[in-house]
Image 1: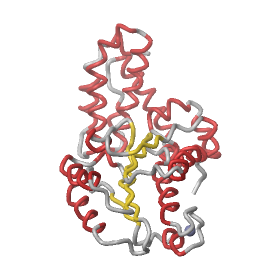
Image 2: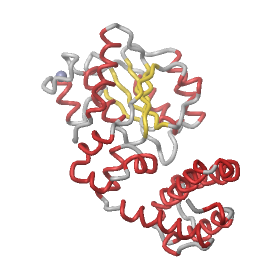
Image 3: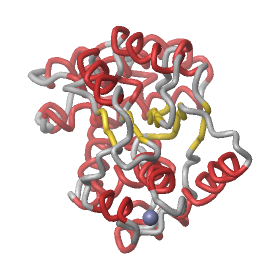
Length: 299
Ligand SMILES: [Zn+2]
């Protein structure tokens, strides 16, 4: 695993709370998608379960963790697009006994913002009446949020965005592909997600989409390559347009009002493409393009 030095101060913050005896049973770990929240949760879980409390890497608990077979370590992930009530109930059922190893038990809820209302309500009871020794780590992809009834019962840890230098170090040789660093972070997310796109050689492709959107906006005619983007990349292709328009709106305030409904429609459509497949991108892009006044489209 590549080092994520920006997690170190966040982990120290957690350790200070622990040493001060102020560790709650539920912790919300917030940060951009791909910034390393799951890695941070792993490090916290290791410290909670390790027999020395330090994540020594040698004790029986640490060895079980390394094998992925620690009986007191639980994960709950979205089933499809949502964390559903059945998953939460099953988890709570598993927690009803006592710890196998006689110590703490740690549950990591991945993409906790995907809990549907029924799942959140089922979890709420556990938050209101914490089980002794059970630690819940709820990982939330910002800017998403949890229901206030849930978040108000959790302590918080925020994983900040790494600096450009930290990301370059993380990506190693891949960093060359990311000279427009703030743009990539806004468009794609944190370093872990970025690394994936870079490894798949997708960044030049995305720059082509951006150029294609600029040409399309100029002529009011959709460039064919935008309609033929692979379905799983459709959301990012639309986000490229979103940031083009957002930047255009920032340059000329009168555009901000004009673009506001369109920007929100673009966000919704991109979110829909992330959740569902089977869309025909060409008519979808054509419809969006038709809503952009031509004289305002260009950057
Ligand atoms: Zn250990």
